Structure formats: structure tokens, C-alpha cells
Image (tube, rainbow, N blue to C red; front, side, top):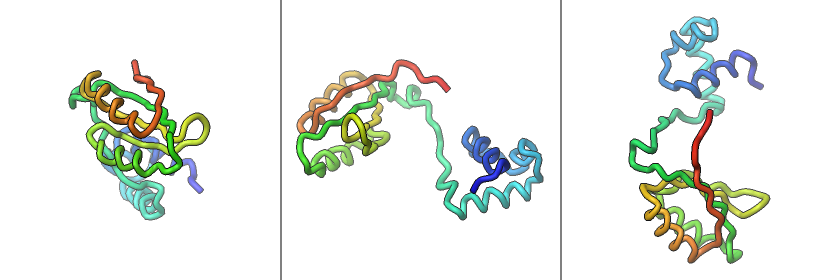
Length: 138
């Protein structure tokens, strides 16, 4: 069970995972060493799985951000999953979901033309509904 301090630590690390333990400690009113011990415990317990980098996808050349609701045509999803595994430059995440559709695919593309090529290939395996991100808040 996470206490208030653990929740504060996680909140701050989500904002900046490169923060020093001293600075993090100042933000949550603990010493740097006590904070480092708390973070180590959160890592050991598997609550913190990894540290990542958030990229500016537009500056990296992938401005077209999409969510694609996937509707499988067959009971065997392996051909679709193999196709998706081979699309690593574009696929951010492939979520198996309940509700409308079978999967929710999050992708990035350099252009609408790249997106179109991807969708034509994707349609060999599944039907889909496309949503393009206009703006992101928060």
C-alpha cells in the first residue's frame, strides 16, 4: 500500500525522472538519503518498473499521431500481431481491449501518405476505425 509520501515521490518522478534525490527530497520534505531509500524500495517492489524519456515527436519527424480501433476479421489474431510487430517505427502501443473493438493501436507517422500506406497494409488483416490526434492537453 502506498502512503502519501510514496505518492508524492511518484508524482514528482513522473514529471522529471532525472531529478536528483536531494532535489526530490526537498520537494517532499525529506533528506536526500531518505528519499533515495524510498525510491529504491519502490523499485525493488516493482512499483517503479523503469525510467523513460518523453520525446517531442514532431521534432523527431513523426507529427501524425493516431489511435486506431482494431476489429479482427478472424479468430486467429496471430497474422495481425505479426504484422504489428514488424511495424516498430510506427507503433507506439497495441492494447488488447474490451468494449468496442479487439485492440487499440497507438501509432505515429511522418506523413499522411505514410499513414495511408500503413492503413492499406493493415486492412489485409483487420478492419479499423481511425482517430487522428488534433491536440494534446495535460
